[in-house]
Structure formats: C-alpha cells, structure tokens
Amino acid sequence: MAVKTSSKKKLDKVLNNFELYAKNFMKVVDITGEEVPLTLNEEQRYLYRNMDKYNICLKSRQLGITTLSCAYSVYLACTRKNVTSMIVSYNLESTQEIFNKLKSIYNSIPDDERIKPKELRNNRYELLLENGSKVLVKTAGYKELSRGLTLSFAHLSEYAFWNEWVQTKGLMGLEQSLMKSDEPGKGQIIIESTANGLNKFYELFKSAEKGNSKYKPFFFNWIDNKKQFASEYDIAEKWYKSINKGNRLTTKDLTDETSKKLYYEKGANLKQIMWRYWKLQDMTEEEFCQEYPSHSEQAFISSQKSIFDTEMIVKRLDNLLPPLPKEELADLPSKLKKYLNNGLDIYNRPKRERHFAGVDVASGSGADYSSIIVLNKDGEQVASFYRNDVPVHEFAEIVNELGRYFSYAYTCIERNSYGLPLIERLRERHQYMNLYKMKTFDQRGKKKKQLGWLTTNASKSIMITDLKELFEKGLININCQRTLEEMRIFEVREDGSTGNKQGEENHDDMVIALALSVVALKDNKYFVKI
Image (cartoon, rainbow, N blue to C red; front, side, top):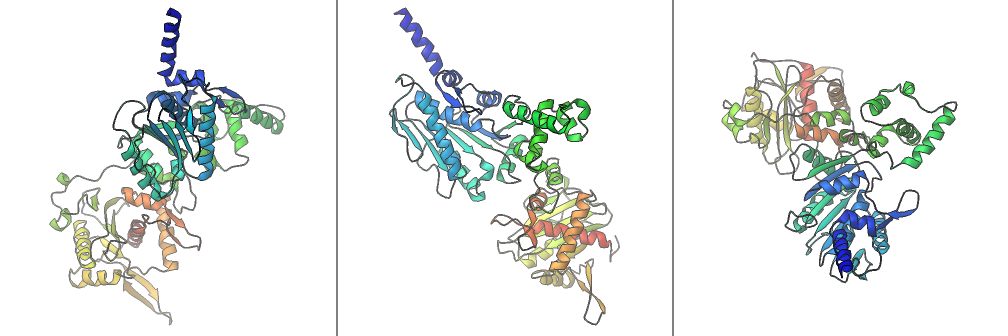
C-alpha cells in the first residue's frame, strides 16, 4: 500500500509539472533526426518559467519555441479537462507542419490512461481528447479564429509574416477569447516570430520592450545557445580550414568590426563566427541579421525597397522624446490648442529665428491627411500636424496660426490639387506673405515664379533625393514618430515611382510635408522681418 501511495505521489508530481511531464513522457525529433526525450533547452525553459499572461517573443531561427507551445498545449489537454488551446500560423504549409509536430508529440506519450487521455479525433487540424480537451491548429486568415471559444493557451507563430489586416483584427479577437485569469495555463498567449521588416510585430515588440504594452518581451539571439547548431559548426569549421590553408580561425583573424563585437562583446565563440562566415556564402548580411539577430534592434534592419536608411530610422525611433505637454505651451493660439496632442505635436518652443515649413494638403474628407512639418534653422523638427478631417478653409487657418507662431515660418506648399485653393486663402484672407516660390521656365526659355511647389515625377525625385541626403547625413533631426514610420515604408514601387508601401492604412503625407520643409530650408529665403 505504501509503495502504491509513493508511486501515486511521484506521478502526481510529474503530472503537475510541465517540465517533468515533457522530459518523462514526451519525445521529439532533434536536428540530427533522432527521437529524444523532450528536455527543454535554455530558451524554452526561460520562456516557460518567466512568461506572463501576455507575451511577445522575437527570436533567431530554429530555437524550438513552437515546439515548446505544441508540447505545452498537449500537456494542458492531457492533464486538465475541457481546456482549449490554439496555435495559429501564417500559411497552410506551416500549419500542416505544426499539426504534424503536435500529433507526433502526443503519439510519443505512453498509452496509459493516467497520463494520456484517448483521442476522439485528430483530423481537420484538431486534436480532441476524451476528457473534453482539445488543441486547434489554424491558419491566419480573414475568418475569425476564435469565435465562441474560451482559450487556455494561444500561440501565434511567425506573426510578423501574417497579413497586415489579420495581424490587427485576428489578434484582437484572440485576446478577447482568452480565459479571464492570471494563473499559468489559464488564458496565456505567446506572439512569436522572427523579424520581417518594420510592421505590426515590430510595433508591438518595441512597445513591449519600452514598457508601454501589456505584453512582456522576450528576445533570444543566435549566440547564447552554443548547442543548437553544433553539427553545423563542425561543418563550418571544416569549410573555413579548406579556404585558410588548413588553419582554424583565431582571434588574430578577427579583423572586421562585426566579428570583433560578436566575440568580445556578445560572447560568440570562434566556431560560431566561422559558422557565420559559412552562412554568409549564401545569404546577405541583411538576411543574416534578420534570421539570426544578435540584438533586437538588428533584427528589424531591412532595406527591402525602402528609400531611406532603415537602420537610421529604427535607431531614431528608439530615441524619441515625447512632445511638449500643454502646460509648457500656454501661449499657443486658441485655434491650435484644440488640436494639441490630437494631431498637433510641438517638440520645441519657438525662438526668434528662421523656421521652415512644408505643407501637404488633402480634402479633409477622411481619406488622405493634411500635414505640416516645421523645422528650425538648424534642421531640427519643432512641430508636426496630421489630420484627415479638416476642410481646406479651416486648414488654411491652422497653417496661418502655426506659421506665425514659429516666427512667420517660410512655408512651402504643394500646389497640386487642393494646394492652390490653400495658397489663395493664405494670401488673400490671411495675408500670409512668407511663401515659397518655385522657379520654372516656359517654352520660350523665360524664367517665371509661381507660389508653391508643383509636384511632377521629376520634381518629386529631386525633393525626395534632397530629403534622403539631409536625413542620412544627419543634417536634419526628426522628432515625430509618425513621420519616421511613414519613412520606413516609403519605397520604390514596381513602376519606378516612389510612395508609401501599398496598404489601406499606409500613408506618405508626412514624408511629403517633410520633403517640402526641406525644400524651404534649402531655399533659405524670408520675405518678412522677424
């Protein structure tokens, strides 16, 4: 009797501890193709032991985070009644692969009813057990993923590769389906992905990293786990010797700055650095950083088709200060006060010096945005305005008030479309005289000037090129998060034109306003006294 009691206590201990359950009852296929007990690696263990209710994980490739979630979902289903877990991936192929992994883990558990309830169904990407618990594996799409479900655990795999609309709407629905509890295994969620440029995953992770989100951030690089690619390290060492007269890498051979930093600052060993060299035979440096980042910032540096240096954009986004509070702007004109921190942001108080503004105007019907960027004489952004619900006549008042607030700013307005009516209102109704004039030549070769900037394919290329030069040389300093976020998706399109990355929520109005402010800054004229 004592023996039976002792055995039951031991079994209960295992059943109540996921790590022990996985190690004793579950098996997985390792990178060499061998079936081995599921002993959590360093990254899996750290994530499992430290995760909260809401978790977001940026990682290097092949660290086993999805395997962890498959095993944890099976564990919850086997040890608790009537619980539902869900794993969501970005395409059908990945969904099938995850479901196969899930079934393999479940099938590896010994057939003992004390530790493994019988399955009632394991098709249609659903593992349903006789105790009423189930694990669902789904593909992220436009249908609601979790309607009518109450989830004990959810894992969103490779979230950075989801469709933009699904990233927002799908996540919102899943969050609402989580069990309302703070206990482990009762309503937890993991968003996991390698990086894929600067998208919703980037925004969520960076917000979490700064402590501005309910999500807890986890980052796992490729360096800390010295065992994960051990077999490839040996192959890479042989390759390195074959091109280096039979000699392996030494610290004296670390001549490039990246390798020095990896070895002396990040803790990479020489085998890992040889492996990196080996990998770079078939992928670019940028691709390697995205797939195998050594720090979180590096993962998101991806030029793709972007016109502006994304590394500089990411670094600037990470170092932005908030706009000035209302208390420090008591002298702001009443017309502008209602927009303060509601479309209008002020980053520095005005000084009695030259300022330069760029204005891109829209109809105010809720589509494109009317925008303003103001720079001081040193190229520092001091203000921004961004609204899509302001009619042209009211926007003229805002441009007038904001321009006069900043020392009667020399203002460059795009005259295309709604720009011309705006210019006319500023001149005739508000007597705003400090406006940019564009020089052109007629067919007879006679020079003429017209108010505002006329955007054509040729003139747009000029102003974007000038903006790129000043930004990447550090000659202007951008303080507006929205402007920087638009810059990161401002790209060369398939037809050779430039503009925002295609998408319903993507705009480039602030980029155009910034480029126009640079036009004014470079022209450096003033038609009024200050």
